[in-house]
Length: 217
Ligand SMILES: N[C@@H](CCC(=O)N[C@@H](CS)C(=O)NCC(=O)O)C(=O)O
Image 1 (cartoon, rainbow, N blue to C red):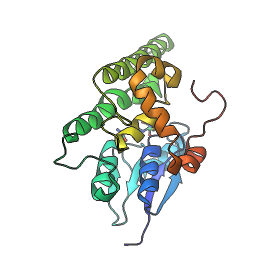
Image 2: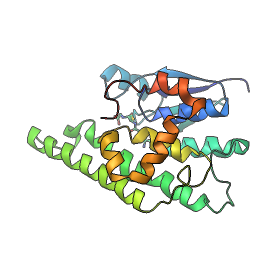
Image 3: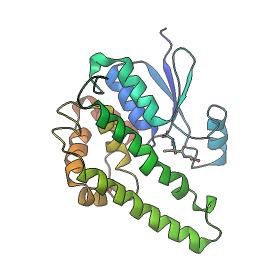
Image 4: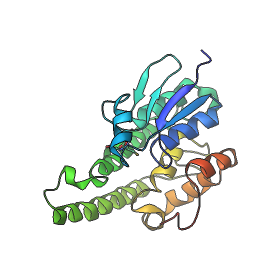
C-alpha cells in the first residue's frame, strides 16, 4: 500500500489540480511527464495508458486506472475526508459541489479538445480560425455564467478550500486566460487569487504552473 500514485500528466495541464490535491493530501505520487497535445510521441505514450490519449490519467496504489479529472479529484477528496477538500456527502454544499465539478469538464474543458487542434472539426484554415475564436468566447461565457450563479466566501462553496477551487484556479489560466477571466468572473477572480497564494502550494505552483512573465495573459 506504500506504492505511490502515478500521474500521467504535464505542467500547466489538467493533471495540475490532481497533483495539487495529492500534494495537499500528503500522498506519495510521481508524475510521468507527457504533453499529448505537443507531439505525436507524447500522445502515443499517453495512449498506452489512456485510450483517450489524454492527461490526467492516474494509476492508483492498487493499480487501478482513473481518467477524467473531475472524477479523480472527487475520488481523492472523498477518500481522505479528514483533509476537508470536498463537502461531505450529507453537507449542504454537496449538491452545488457536484454541479460545478461536472460543469467544468462538460462545459469548459471539452472546448479544449476542439481548440487544441481545430482541424479535428474544421475542414479548412478559415473554419479553424472561426472555431478558435468562438470556443474562446464560449469559454469566457461559461465563466461568466458560473460567476453569476455562485456566492463565494473565501472559496467558491464556503470558507474551506476544496478541489473545486483548485480546478477553477488551474482552468482559469487557460484560454482566454486570466485577464479575461478576471473581467468576466470577478467573484471567482478573488477565489483564484487566494488559491494562487495558498502557502502550502507555493513550491508546487512554482514548479508546475509558474507565475512568470505575462502569465495572466
Ligand atoms: N475529459 C478529460 C479531458 C482531458 C484533456 O482534454 N486533457 C488534455 C490536456 S489538459 C489533453 O490531454 N489533450 C490532448 C487531446 O485531447 O488530444 C478530463 O476531464 O480529464
